Every structure is written in structure tokens, then in C-alpha cells.
Image (cartoon, rainbow, N blue to C red; front, side):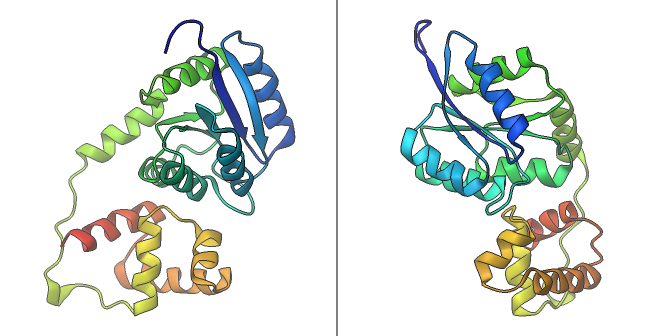
Length: 218
């Protein structure tokens, strides 16, 4: 990117005060132009389709469509737009889900203006941006010994629906997104998840993501 090129930016966050503050704060930079804002994932996808920004700041926990699903759609349909996650969540599950969906960066909302602005610039250059705490978590995950996949005959017997939901968890989808994908209620999704967690002795969705990957690769 040349020095005189303006970075076009979209901001997606369901909290109006946060969304507006980010738009104003980042828009003050001479090399950044905020072209759109969105209050949920569906609006984020529409904004990218309409404006094709260089970068979109993406919250994860949003109504209608979550940030992970929106990231996956943008990554698939608008590869020229870089998704930079900006969220309050720094747990393994959220990080893995966002990166697997195609996010090129991951920051938490305790980052200051200078850090966010530099991250936007770096993302616009096509480079990966990870907050220090996110890097530490990814390193811990990469170096953690993975339990060996059980032989086929010892694998947990899941129902077809449980296997389907496990696969969607492995793709990074959250309960509301799974419910919409399968056209079932969120309560039904929770029941299936509770059952498969019990059967497979899982204790978190991060465990479920790793379990899904092991089953897919075995």
C-alpha cells in the first residue's frame, strides 16, 4: 500500500456507543476513511458487499448473525476485505473459531486507539495481527499435547444429529447460528450439545472443537 492510499474501513459492533466511538476515533486518522457501520453480523456482510472496504472491525457476540458466521461469509464472498476481530472475548474457543472462519487479526477491546489504528493499517497490508495475549494462547494450544484419537471401535457413539452439531461446533458456529443452520430451536441445540458433552466427556466448547478435529482426522 502506498503512503497516500486511504484505507477504507467498516465497523461492526452491536453496542451503538462502541460502534460510533470506534468510527469517530479511527476516522480521525488521515489515512483511514470509515465507509460503513453495522450493528449485527448480517448488516456487516451487507456493508462489505456494498462498500468492499479494505478492513472490517468485527465484534463476535452480536445478534441476528454472530461475528464468526459473518467472518466466514465475508472471507468466502469478499476475499479482498480483511476481517480484524475486536472483541471482549479472549478464550480459546473464540480465538480458534474466528481464525478458522478466516479472520486475519484478533484484538481485545482493552486495546488503545494507537494499537487498534496500527492493527487496521497492518491488516490492510495483508498481514496478520494478534494481540499479545492471543499469541500466548495460540502458542499454548500449539504446544499442548493432543490426546490420541481412539480406535474406531472405541469411539463415542453419537447420534446423527449430535455428529452434525459437533461438526458445526468445529466450524466455529455458536448455538444461535447452529439453530438457524439446522432449522431447529436453540433449546434443542443445547440439549444435543449437553448430550454429546456427556458422552464424550467434554467440558467446554474449546474441547468440542478439538474433539471434532480429531474425529474428522481419524
